[in-house]
Length: 522
Ligand code: NAP
View 1 (tube, protein in one colour):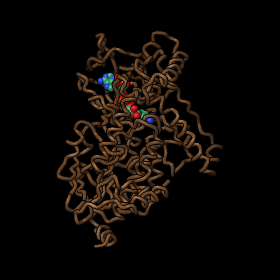
View 2: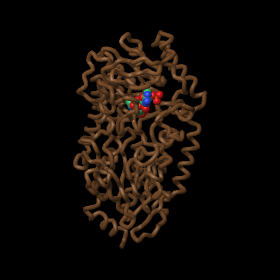
View 3: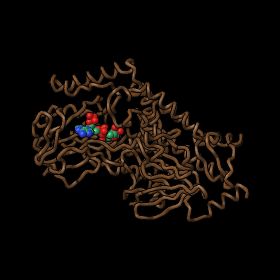
View 4: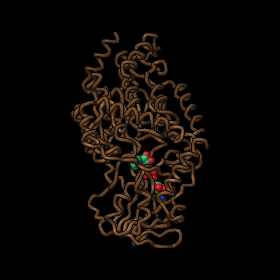
């Protein structure tokens, strides 16, 4: 059978999707959009929710927004003139994602309310079988997993949590029926979420008690409204929006060494700036002391807020830095024995970001379980592919979270790489492609070595690190460098297997053609 006949044989099998995409957030949806743009229509996107948007669909807490500027926190191929602010709020981001789904005709490809429960690779046929929680079975040649790092809320196991007679709500699953007006509200957590929700509710509540375990570095949020004139200009000239995006992109790239590296030369200036901002905003010395971080700048996510410090100084706000001992019927008891009486407790305690184990049961070649392979930490070549799991790709996988810029800058580059890989397999009529173990190991070694220079490992505790203190979450480098690294899908780094179960080598023509494909996509 020739390669061409082979392709036909694959594509006429109506029961087998070419691509199954898991997750309809920015990454999964972007994957669908780019596949369609390249002429592929044989794919479906599965999402456990009722709508597109992922984390921007699920997080609807008061004040929810993005601390990356809107022009950069959007697809490069779909600049949007309608942003109201330099930093967009959740509702608008969600609206933007829905706009993209509509415009790029993604809805016929979307299957909502579908939780992918497991995926298993059949070595004989080279086909993945996906099982949904509802018992449906779907077959696909390729699987792209884009479940997102913030899908699951983290609820700490506070002693007595079930005894509380008031309401408890996690920010990631906001209950809009809770009325905060005139209530005594406790806010646990002062990370990126906590500093958004506190100022947004303080005018409504009777009293806000903030339970802070760790003070964070905070930079002012230089937000502003985008005027109608600017919007009109942007509508007329999408290239001016692209220019604004480019400016923000390179500005963020310049900040990378300050946010990523551990060396004092990159710490002293930003720490000084944040301290003087704190001093300027908070006059009370004792409060300032409590709000001063004790770890290096960038070790945890640097927060961007202009209303957190003003909020903390209000008479109707108290900052509690004693550890939480337990939750009672009436409120929260701290380590100093004080019981803080509350009507509502808000948990801004973050997400269960998975750094070990698979996002769901995934069985690859030779019945290998990804959960087992990743039991000490998730690893993948370029954060995208892992050996023994052919035709399976991750978006924003291990090592490729953003340390200093928009996550979309990573996922878009990955989408393009995965699209090249999928197209290559299909065009060559191959049964499977899987990354060579030695290639993956070399990449992981580089990531581990680089991570030693990062501030993330300088001693603080954050969701970036796995239980053994390793960074396999964020990319230890510039985004531009990562983009160059993965601009071209290189078949030479993969084991290529045809339908006769023969391993084939990537030819020089293959290498050349993928170079041309990569150039075309720039
Ligand atoms: P987070 O950064 O993990 O912060 C969780 C907060 O809860 C921390 O202050 C933490 O204290 C506290 N906490 C957790 N367990 C606790 C316990 N048992 N007792 C007391 N305090 C406890 O979570 P997040 O604020 O939701 O942010 C997570 C990530 O989501 C961010 O890093 C960011 O990537 C993303 N995010 C982005 C935006 C945006 O604007 N783009 C907005 C929100 C979130 P410790 O610091 O002491 O652990």
